Length: 619
Image (tube, rainbow, N blue to C red):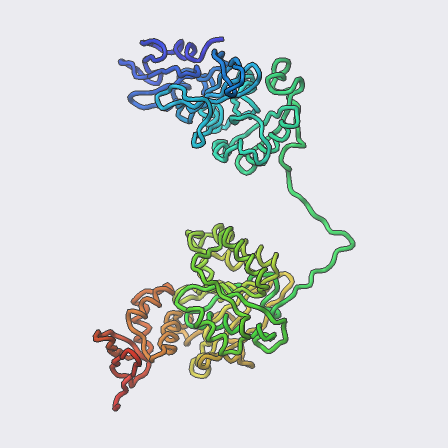
């Protein structure tokens, strides 16, 4: 049989040189000076190299009318010498050798076959010589005939996967691209198949040829498991005559292999039907109908409306076996996951001020939790171990850091919410996931004002939307909560209202829903303009100044806090001007800072180490 070297050289012109290196005229263009290098490797394969201009191997092969597999020998290459398996063992004669090369053709290691069917291995040294027997632990492992395999995947050709190198050569003689993993057959957990092998076959059409013995069947099952999700299509066959591909092809053709559908991946969908014994699903609730058991609920809130306060008060009510509206419920333990400016002690202060039961509200002390697979596994363990019934996530985006590059991407958002939904279903816990509403004015439906992809809303059972009551004169400080989304078995609940008075929260009854017909308006339209709602930034700034512990907020602190909500400095200064906040000077340890206060009588402040004092006009 013609060797790969002889096949290539016969199709070139102007060949000069001698084994193992030649130069020739390039077949891709008129070549006055030889610019194609041809090198015969130790395994009998050929390496083609274009000097200038550069052409890749595929282009050169097409010009020669050859394929990638033509660069490799298809017969077992005889090898002289012996291999001694141990210090006291007798030498075994080596009858064949198979060289494994990297994607660029660099020899990595040689697998030998002895007369007794042992398969000793030797790695190549950097200079191309063979090293000692055995493969170093850090040696790179690759598929046999890797360059030809990568070329076939690129061209969309089928790749045949056999159990050993002898079978690969037999398949190549039959006219197909074939490969195998080093080390032969191995079942699940044998570590003979590396994930990089699956990556090299990603998107390929593969045919697995299994040996007809127990080890061969286990090897096929391992390959099917490892390749699922990587390859486009996968068929499994076995020999019609004999044990393996080599035996079969001595008497039959490729089309005569026997199909093993029982070893192939399941096709189609796994379907389910219900019989006469079907039982209706009756939803259960922590707080009906707003918090169904085993579901995720989204809480969208305008800046400053007090979503963290509401989360703490909700935990307090449930710990005492009551919903915020006074309805009797099962006493529930809460896990509060939070990041940002509020500390666990501050949240606990609001929880205790609203009569939360001691020890029924827990917090995560670390800062490394994100909702990836590992983080969700830890979260589920905590829910089960601590018998948690409610999980408040404040806010959802904090725990998606590094998982979502674009919060408007439905695909990225879905992965995170799916994990939380699965945890809720398995544990029976209810999740309340907090997020901000979009910045500034909007004329969109209230249910669509949450930041990020609509997939966040679509993936949750329900959606509560918290907004300031638009009538500030008669309902100052009143927050309205709408249930904006029902589900298949759960109807939307009635709106409810609450107001914070000091550290306590009062739920207010009998207030008509100002958002029943869509977005409420701040004033009548002027000069044909569409109705607009009050700026969410204005609400946030007002709440920040109103709740300031010392009666003022330093300007640099205000900018930091408002930027965390997604607003710019201009929006902050516009809001301060609309609120009529007074600018004062605060002196701390000899340094003066600018600050704002809603107190019209506020004067400059000198803050000592042990106290602060706001000086009013006339003091």
